[in-house]
Length: 224
Image 1 (cartoon, rainbow, N blue to C red):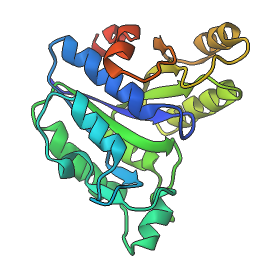
Image 2: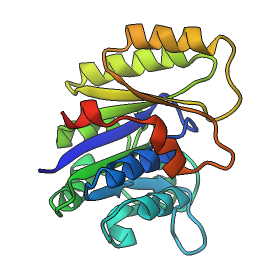
Image 3: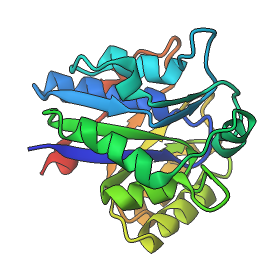
Image 4: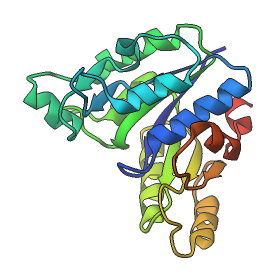
């Protein structure tokens, strides 16, 4: 049985890729076949490849081609709709959904689809990456960057996910940098107010290691 989740964040730079890799590591240790998709990536090296997508490939078990993991690779590290405009390309949620379904039907038991930035990041003048998640009708995992402002960002994102008719399956508290002031009080507030289980609190790791971060995560509620 294949289970798929869309990974989004409270903002850009909150550690979606790092947490996605940690979730893949945890699922792999549990004996699950895993795959990941970065449908749209903005910011690529000279070979046309994106570092986030390459990291996902390192931690999933299925031997997918790069183009399957990251079907749309945009050169400029800017908002996807702007990067696409610069290259004369048109992004459509329906087409991206079809590409994602190809991987979802490939036999992996645990599949992650990593978004870009936050929930409402545009891919065109009319659509956002949220439209992709809606078309796929998958559960959502929210990565909360534990920093000043995270409560507001997390609650607004959760409201938007619910308004779009999707299920917030869980959230991860990620410490990507120095511990924020009153971090325990902020974490407790999020646990009370977010309508989803906390999958784990990942400490700041220097350098980051997805295998080590996986020890802080629980997949029990996702897989039940």
